[in-house]
Image 1 (tube, one colour):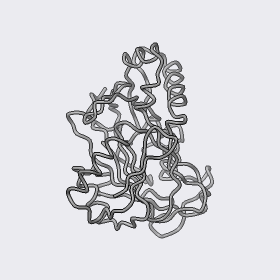
Image 2: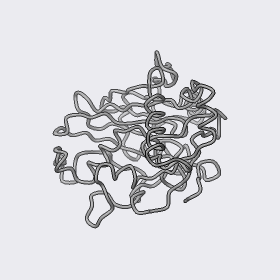
Image 3: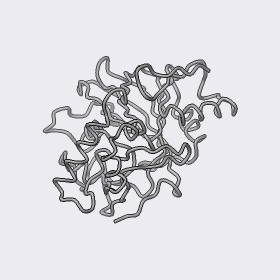
Image 4: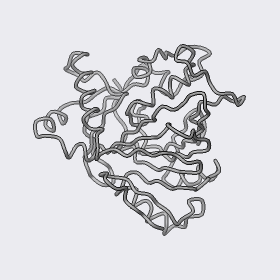
Length: 289
């Protein structure tokens, strides 16, 4: 196993010389330690089957079941093999979710228990575009000036997929291509803007597109504060952009990173597979308001 830190970034590493599907316990222990250190691990050329990806993900603990399964396709390809409509005026709700994910976010912050991480793999990728970008919220917290650091420690924000998707005209309705799982609730978790990592103890910012409505601030003031904080936090050297090749696997720590997809030519297929690592209720739960 070779673990090579990503150059010119505060986080991330590329891991080669191993096969995730057959990793022994000692190898997994070393990998888990590297994950906690680097927060983002990239594994080129793994070509995992769905069953192998699920098996690897379960080594971290329970999987957060999205749509009732242990793995879900994040794709602009429909079940019949055709590509979804690519014109904004014709986007169905699944395309609106895909486009929504092009804004910085952490997974499942809008659920009672946010995810601890994810295993993500590439099956079909376009020749250009469609990168996945990651941002280090540990380094962002460390770089805050004293006044802003004091301020974020005093503030929390509500998190809601209903809120973030409403910006794209996506609302819960019968016959939608995307229903349930975050779109079927009006209660919103209230999460502090600063999160302590349960395993490393490091502090990081917990922000992103689902965060809104800071108690005590007017709506416009809250929106401006959060948008400015995301824009400042997600800058080099705190960002890594991964250009996918079919067979790649990425593992990230949702407790301290934000991520987003980048656009591509939507007339071309992109098929990715996502297994979300369930968070621990003792450390990733938040009160509903």
